Length: 105
Ligand code: HEC
Image: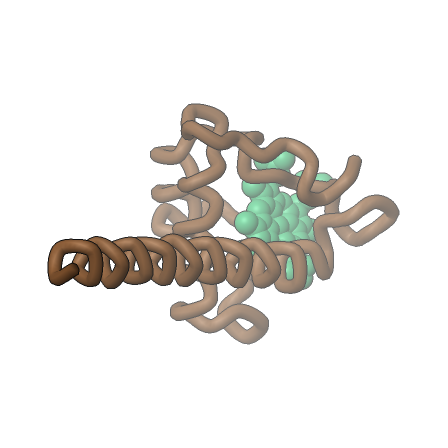
């Protein structure tokens, strides 16, 4: 009986962990669409972009090297940018789950 109970608890913990991770990923994805998609969308100020447009390392360095043509610091907080970058890298071109159509072209 004791063994069964422990297995049960373990399974619950695993399920909760998976659930939280999925939730956090979804959150970061929503942030990307909301914040970056404000300009980067069809008929927007800038063309649609997607995580799979670049390799993870390129995303990682993109804002650090100040490659973005306009300053976003008064629209996107450093914390939000970090969350978005995590999401972009997790779904980059060379990731396990590339996402090419989050923002439709
Ligand atoms: C205030 C509007 C605005 C926001 C918000 C914005 N961008 Fe941009 N972005 C631009 C403009 C304008 C360009 C230049 C577009 C062009 O060259 O035609 C650009 C260019 C880019 C490019 C280069 C284009 C390319 O195809 O390589 C990338 C990558 C990019 N942005 C990523 C992002 C990401 C990631 C975010 C969210 C963290 C973001 N941008 C948020 C306006 C914005």
